[in-house]
Image 1: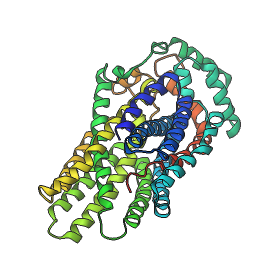
Image 2 (image 1 turned 90 degrees about the vertical axis):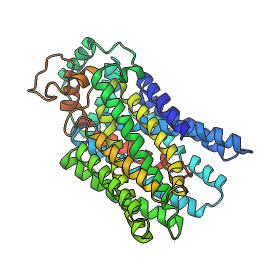
Image 3 (image 1 turned 180 degrees about the vertical axis):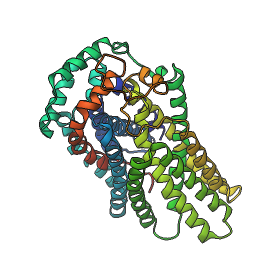
Image 4 (image 1 turned 135 degrees about the vertical axis):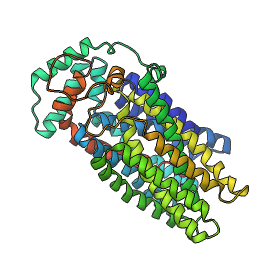
Length: 430
């Protein structure tokens, strides 16, 4: 978990500096090498070191590609793409359970999870770079090549004046020449508020998510069956979360499900004298919390601007690992007082749900491109009349109005299968 957290920060920053596509492929190469090496380690210390480095690479690959997928679609399909990727994570967990059931030797399991990643190395040739990132770094010609490729796939014609306007907007942008760092997440008031709130939300919701997953294997019956059933429920709730966010928005769904999960955990803590009832409340808390977890993963990239989106996502996932590392220790509080673990998870889940209320709603809005867009988002409407003048938000308007609806097929075809494979990498939950 510590390796995954540091990897989120390092590779997130690397992605904002050098691009989404090369960072993703680099992480895949490192993951393949490190995961294979871990299956042949002669001692425990070597295994731990390689697993930590592997966690960093795998986490970097997951969320860098996640950001890439979000950036190549327009607002109308962004939620569907994000939730499809998040749902594929649950599919990966389910396949992991099957692999662990039939492959009981950990070395063989580790090796299989490494080798299964090999086909994804073709992404060096087939995965497009994010046009948003290219344009924000004044590489408009490269962005034009990517967009024209997408237009051909979708049989769409993009007017030449759109490219001319994008070139002009990029050239006159105040932030185009700047190199952004982690400090830019805290430099301005609105960015500081979003970053701190997102980090706290990830700590709370992810800590509860992993804490309740660990508790699933302690239930009566076969631990593999329990884990598989819990994962299957996650898949159904991820679909429900997708439909709900499309209808009601991001904030109400994430906050509502987190609060409901917290109530389930608190009810479980209050009924420890009735083991069956308490277990059922805990299961309710787990599956509803899973919905808030997947929806939060889909929502987080939407609140950060393109220039620091991967860095912000990396910081958020790094904070999530803090909650993940604390979760097993919270379960040990039951030795002090039996209801204390579920009481702690209930309070944490409710706190995460309330924190989400401080973030901006993003349903139907274009992704922010610059920090200036984020700072101005609360002062003026994001969408105005079709004004083609060069402003700080003109780039975002052009990309969403004319371009990214033509990239939907690329996002769906090149990313969904990727996450199913990547999320088969970690055998620690079993």
